[in-house]
Length: 123
Image 1 (cartoon, helix red, strand yellow):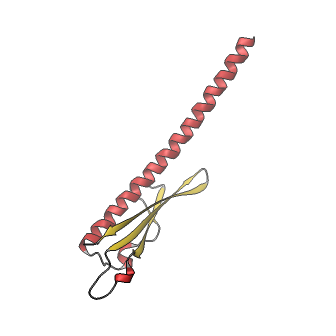
Image 2 (cartoon, helix red, strand yellow; image 1 turned 135 degrees about the vertical axis):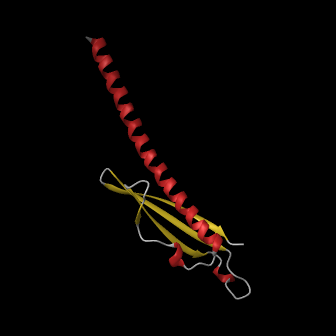
Image 3 (cartoon, one colour; image 1 turned 120 degrees about the vertical axis):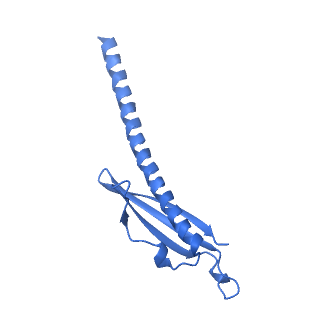
């Protein structure tokens, strides 16, 4: 009988650890999807800035949009502007531009978010 109790406790411990690992894996997968969406949107922004680095903010920033590849995820692109505004004159134009992508999804009835920010260099 004592061995049965010990085996039962061990079984509950294994089930508990297994449940924790499964939850962590699902959360990690969602963060990985969010990172994928953010990286792909930054690639789109990079292609726009390669053509016209001084494009207006309205050409870069977006409202909250649904991801076409992952319908449970939404994203927004924020053009944070030029980081070297003090150089903005007719002779010297700013060369650093910051962009932030925010990705949102719902998990356990709560809205989660992931942010990826980078600075582009216009040469």
